Image 1: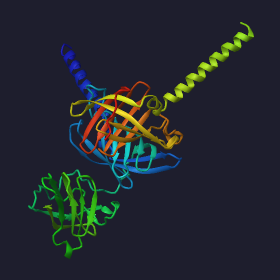
Image 2: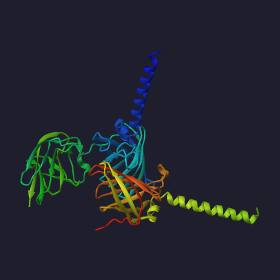
Image 3: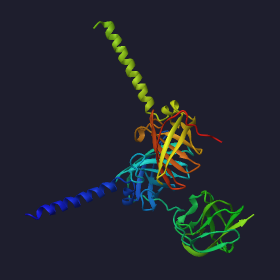
Image 4: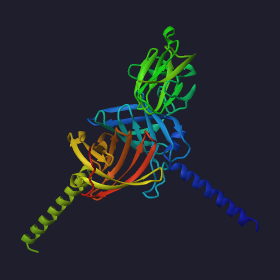
Length: 271
Length: 149
């Protein structure tokens, strides 16, 4: 029986570690989303209307909770960027480790604040663009999925290049994909979730940015570009865009689901 | 106790309760403290580790009842449009009636949520465009003025 005490102590230690790990995981807003990607939601709006919709967690970026962000897509589709809130008060707050969260829906200028537990997500929404408010409640539902959307934060599938004045860069890409881009105003066709090419620009002289799909005039594909400030441009072959600092993200869009070889050229054209 | 004294005592009690109820009603709304104090001195702790002091001013309101919004601006200037949160859940929720609030800052793509009481404003921000988070606390300060261009 002399060996029983250390064994008991070890068992207690292991149990304490398991409990502490579980407690840590339970306190983070992302853990329930990791376990359940699809959620079924019910919202009550100002004026007494009700809306039922699905919410799906798609991509998460970063491993450090203090800088990690994740995407939630609501039926529409309406994509949002979200982050778990901080635990504790300043100074000394622990960022990204709380069960509460904040999201921003850029398409509707909407802010969402809420809490996510294992079996329930609750919160409030305020859309500044539509002066609309909701209170909502969601429960995990694996059958609840939302059509895929473009995710400009994913790494480019074809490549990334910094472009300098008068030095165009051609990137070979795989055009098309599963995302129906008709949810974006003025766009149609199918593209990949991640950008095909990303061009980074540091403005040095006045000018414009030209993005083009060479050969697209004889093929049915088209071009979709999201500028550093978030403006979406859908065009047939090429586009000239105002000069901005940051990343221009480009997709080659096909008229039907599927893929094909293509290329995108980015150029910094001085005045 | 005479009838007259009893009635007077009841009147005092009823007046006190009415005053307390009115104050409680006002305190439940995030905008009442802002109507009283339109200038606040704040400190934000950013996820980068920086502690940044700034001023926060109320600049206006529009709409009424559940539709009311109010505008605030912080040093920068960074303007935002805000609403009080809803009190209660589901179909019984009373919109724009809670001490909690939500703001959207279009200039920096920032979401803000917090709570406003008479002597303190606390909350958190998430700036999507630069992927920075912050947690802040403010106290009323009539001298804290945000310079506007």
